[in-house]
Length: 119
Image 1 (cartoon, rainbow, N blue to C red):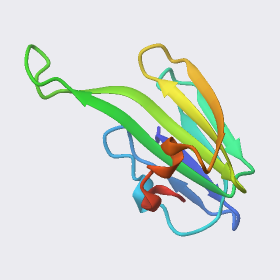
Image 2 (image 1 turned 120 degrees about the horizontal axis):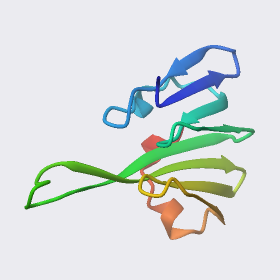
Image 3 (image 1 turned 90 degrees about the horizontal axis):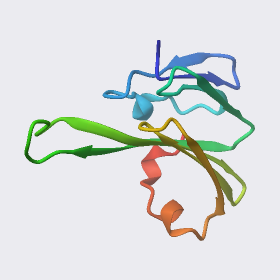
């Protein structure tokens, strides 16, 4: 099952990879109608109605010990932009909780996002 499935406004479909290779930056430059995102617990999150979307994973790596060099997925961020408003879905890999944060373009978190990630 892909990490995400996108449906574009022209009704074409793009399927993402997995948590290790998301394929987010491989998304064609088309307007997205809907995103169906596979959550770590197996559920799905559906988003639509945004002008642009952003996705990234927060990952840590142990520097020593039993898990030295192993990736630990901490959070997944899925962000929708509509005009100057942003809705952030912060998804915890540990608890499966989803924190929803509403903000605007003045937020430092939004300002620090790499512009190439907006689709």
